[in-house]
Length: 394
Image 1 (tube, rainbow, N blue to C red):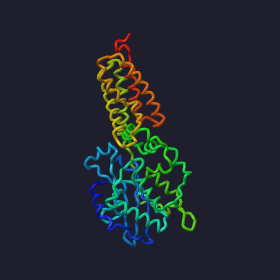
Image 2 (cartoon, rainbow, N blue to C red):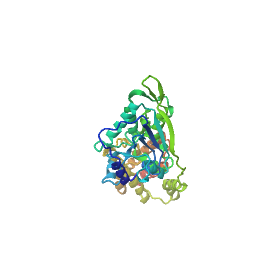
Image 3 (cartoon, one colour):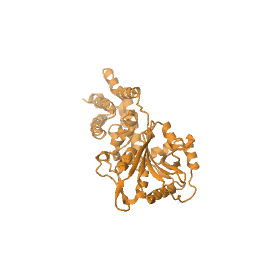
Image 4 (spheres, rainbow, N blue to C red):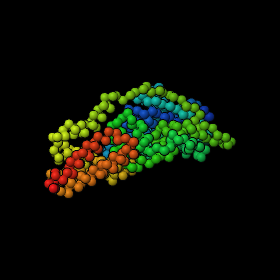
């Protein structure tokens, strides 16, 4: 969503006072789940809370996914893990499409589903109060953490806060159990191999943690399922389904990723290995191709080290992609022409690291997203560069 539009929406519906109005008996509170979009920041879907009161004219969608990628230093802050997001407020529907949140999601061809929550009048009022206070300018900014504190986990927490301990979650739902943050992520990247490759080799061991029931709801669809299976305890001791009614507000038209883009991905990933096979007899040890591979993998490895030690992400720590993108290759490249005998042992060690990396990728990634071609190529070139004859050792 463009920052200009969100800026207008925010000030158009800025809370008039410090305290929320008293909702009427006809008010309803709903969880809005939006399907994945075509941009990387929309691949995983979106969640918002909608409070609607026809008697008071209240139509407010609370959206914790607002950011401005044009803001000064945005990309630098993103790399450092210091990314402020905002809670914005807008109407779900409005005669002017410029101010309609629903029309915006429709324009992106994203499915929109409403779950009307079976909350008591007191719980609805408390949720409304919490959100209105949170929407004030002094409270509406938070540090976004994509797997732990995002546009899906925030609505979850606000609903649970408003309902207290009256909500009972289905802890036996095996669908939401037993998968890691990375596995959930990869489920949504199947149609975007470039994004899948990039995110996987930039993110480290922390996202291989198996999620709990609540942690899995960093994915909006998982929060939808969690709410759908939850129950709420009434004041009289009876229980009811937390979601009273589910309504599809907009059904997206099916789209598929073009075959051409997927074909280009696999061609690019396989090209180093194909080049080695075709030029096997004419490739010189330590030549231009070997220097290119060492420079490429070494630079990427240095970037991964910087993300590990120089950022606040947490999720880029302990990155086992360093077994493949070895920063030591920069040093090896600088010493290659000098033909120092001990450099041979470096490439033997690099072969061992690469083999370990391949095993880790197969186990944790359940596939290597095309990197297997690069790994095979590197292993073969490391073997050539480790040859004792190349260093004049008899």
